[in-house]
Image 1 (tube, rainbow, N blue to C red):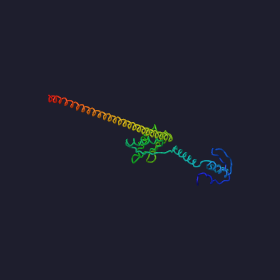
Image 2: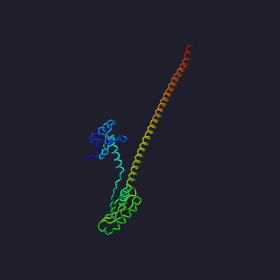
Image 3: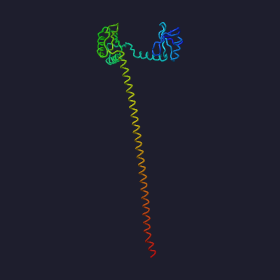
Image 4: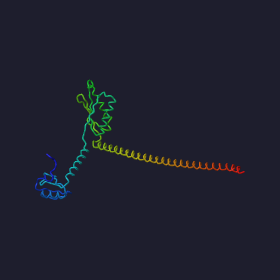
Length: 260
C-alpha cells in the first residue's frame, strides 16, 4: 500500500476541513470548493489527516513539500548514530609488533565511538594457562584507558576469553569531530590552491616585467649602435675632406713653378 497522502482529485469525500497556505483555519468546506481554492492559489489540495472526520486537507505545493521532507530525512539519517561492535582477536603469546598493530586498530575503533570486543583464542595446551589471556586483556585495557573503559570484564567462553571495551566518547560526538576535521582539511586544501594561484600570478608578472626590461635594453642598444654608425660616417666624411684639402695644397706649388 502507498504511504503517500491523497492529493487533488484522488480525495474522495464530500467535504473537508481546510487549512490555508499559511496555516490559517478556513473551516469545513465542500470538496469542490476546496479544489477551486487550490486552483485559485495555484497549489495542491493535500490530505494531511485522513482518519479525521471530516478529513483535514491543506493547500500547499506538494512537490516542494516532498523535496523538503526528503532533505529532512536525509539529514536525520546523517546525524543518526548506530551502535557498532567491532571485534579484535588475539593469541596469548602474541608478538609485540602484532600487539602494537592490534592495539592501533582498537584505538581507532574507540576514537570512532564504537565498542570493541576483544577475544583471546587459546589453542592446545594454552587452555591450561587462562591467566596468560587475562593478563593480556588487562594490559590492553590499561593501554587504551584514555579512550575507553571495560564495559564487560574478561570471562572464559569455551576456548576463548572475551572482554568488551566501551568508548568514553559518544558516537554522535565522534561523527561531529570527524566531519569538522574533514571540513578543516578541505578548507586547507582550498587555501593552498588559492596561494598557489597567487604565486603563479606573481611569477607571470615578474616574467612580463623582465621581458619588458630586456626589450628596453635591446632598444637602447640599437640606438647606441645607430649613434656609433653616425659618428663613424661623420669621421669618414671629415677625413675625406681633409685629404682633399691636402691634395689641393700640394698642387698649387707645382702650378706656380710652371708659370715661372
